Image (cartoon, rainbow, N blue to C red; front, side):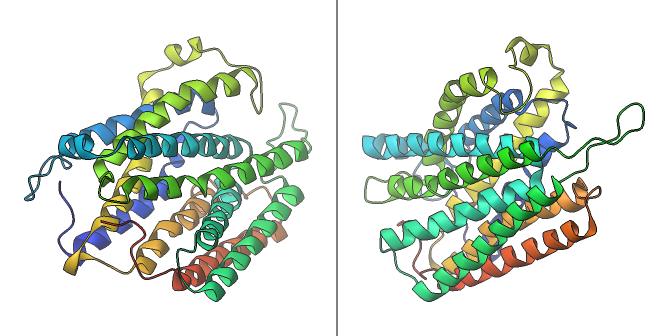
Amino acid sequence: MILPSSQISVFILLILGMLGWGLWANTFKSTGGKWRFELFYFDFALGVLITAVVLALTAGSLGFDGFSFMDDIRLAGKRQDVLGFAAGMVFNLGNMLLLAAISLAGMSIAFPIGMGLALVVAAGWNFALKMGGNATFLSIGAAVTLGAIVLAIMTSKASSLISPPPSADGTKKKPKKKSAGKAVALSLAAGILLGSFWRLIQMGMAGENGLGPYSIGVMFGVGVVFSTFVFNLFFMNLPVAGQPVEIAEYFRARVSRHGTGVLGGILWYAGLICTLIVARAQGPAAVSTRISYAFEQAAIVVAALSGVFLWREFDGAKSDARIRVGLIIFLLVAGIGISAVGIAPAPPVNP
C-alpha cells in the first residue's frame, strides 16, 4: 500500500483532509434547499463507498512493500472487520443528524454545536480509556469548546439564524424559533455519535490483526451504505421538517443533482483516508499527533466560515448575532489549539 514517505507529503495530506472534512457539506448547500437531505444522502453514501473501493484497489494495492488491500483484508481478524463496519454505522447516523440540522439551521451553527460536542465527547473517551495526554490542557480545551457550543445555542435561539425572506406581498415572516430549537437538538445528538465512531476505527486498526487504512476504509464505507437504507426509512417517513418524501423523487432528479451528493461523499472520504494514512506514517515522515489533531479539528472552523462567508447565513441577522458568530469561531480555534497541546504525543493508531 502507498503511505507518505516525507513530512511534506504528510502536510499535504493534512491540508487535503482538513478541506475535505470542512467543505463536504457545501455540496448539499449548493442545492439551494431544493434537494432534501434524505435524498442527497443516498448519493453521499454511494460517493463514500465508491471512493473507498477505488482507492483500496489502486493506492491500497500498490507501493514498494508489496502488501495489497486484498492481503490486508485476508489477514485481518473478523472482529476488526466488524469494528470497521460498526464505525461506519455509528458515524452515519451522527452525520445524517448533522445534515438534518444543517438543512434547518445552516453550517455556521450546526457544525460548531455538533462537531464541537464531538470534540468534547472524544476528549471524554480519552479520559475514560486512559489514553494519555495532559489532563489540564484537555480539560481547558474541552471547557472552551463547550463555551463555543453554549454561545452557538444562544445565537441560534436569539436570531433563528437567518431572517426568512419576505413573502410574495412583501411582508416579513416571523423567525422560526421551533426549527432553531430542533436544529440544536439534532446537532447535539449528532455530536455524541460523531465523537464516538473514531474510537471504533482505532480499535479496528489496532493489534497484529488490525486493518490498514485502505481496508478499514472499505469496511467503513460498506457500513455507511448499508445503514443509509436503514436510517433513511425513518428520516423519509418521519422527516425533521416538511412532508414525508417518496423514493420516486430520487429517481426523477437530474444527474447533476445526484452528482452533488456523490461529490460530497468523495470529499468527506478524502478527509477520512488522509487522516488514516497520516496516522500510519512512520520514520522521517511521521509528524506529531498534536499537529495532525489540530488540522483534523480545524475542519470545524472551515465549515463554520463557509456558512458565514460563502453562504452568508447571518446576513439577515442582527449585528449582535454576527458578533457572537465571530466569538464562536474564536472560541473554537482556541479550544482546538489548547486541546491539541494536551494530546498524547504517541500516535493514536498503532502501526
